[in-house]
Image (cartoon, rainbow, N blue to C red; front, top):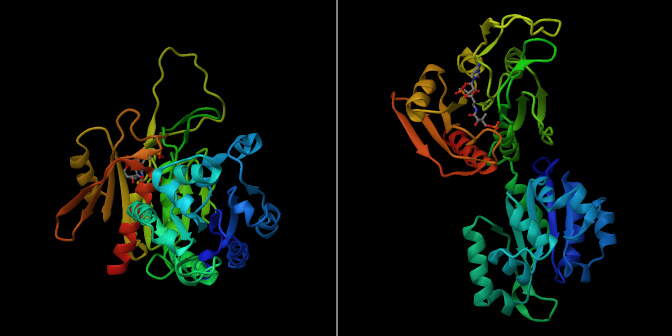
Length: 406
Ligand code: PMT
């Protein structure tokens, strides 16, 4: 369990309920297991535990005010939700569950829960009559259908003196469920993953380069999703404005040649996902001095860069077990992508139509996953437009299934 939680960033929402006292122990136990815990305390939660105890145990500031000028300027509800690997609501009151199901956002906690693109788990805690009420059950069903994981509740004697279902799960059980979420078993624990991301910059002179519009959002999201499934993840990235993802070995490079060298040095890996937009060509020579504009016309001589994806896919006995490429196409997407899949000898290829403004630097993406079935046929699976994080998680789910059946 300890490894599964190491360096995981948990955003713990403590809503109003007597079980909030158990959340103090939960913070302590999560941190002992190596997780970073950041806490959001609702107004109701603060009736049961003090911000001071929560801050002392999490060794961090406690967030509770949606309208805090400093928090919004420095952190913000969006960043709070994005900087977590998992959002855990414990205890989850009937009110909080209702707000989540209805999409209400009238305080910091509910706004984060609406804004998050991360997995969400909730540990309901309430009186048995409230828990079994048709309204609460309908809300729970709605949340389940949206992918929220419901932990418990347990049965037993409650603080109100009544007995039945509605008690918050014991801290050890919540901890085990959270660990299982990140867990090694059944996912990518013990596997090494390599991801390329971002553009490459091919220098012409000390100030100019040939580059492209890749932001790294898609590749970084894939690295984070692989890491969240327990893979030891290496991210080789071209120049991007994105921060290095926590827990992931990130190698920053500029050129395609540097990217190739970093990828080759990272072998062996079990899976390689090449999402980088690598320049196919580089200036044959780099001038040490800034080129002068003098002549009316200039001809640029280019040299071909090695194909990193194809190199990894032909790496002999160092070839990753699963090689996944991307295809950025502006026309005849499926036809061109299918040819690329075979030409570059990869197992899968994620095709996206990068026509103007559709993918580069956007937060969402619409992709088709192409797979070779080993009998010379290509299967294709078109996914709906969704956030790049969702694309990443869906792709990693496929990778998990691949290794389960491999
Ligand atoms: O970074 P974002 O702003 O989030 O945008 C995401 C993306 C558009 C960059 C991403 O979704 C994507 O499509 N990445 C692949 C871009 C690309 O270069 O595609 P391509 O069709 O030119 O190349 C095909 C494959 O070969 C890719 O896996 C590419 O990484 C790889 N390649 C290409 C050339 C080269 N010299 N070496 C390579 O490894």
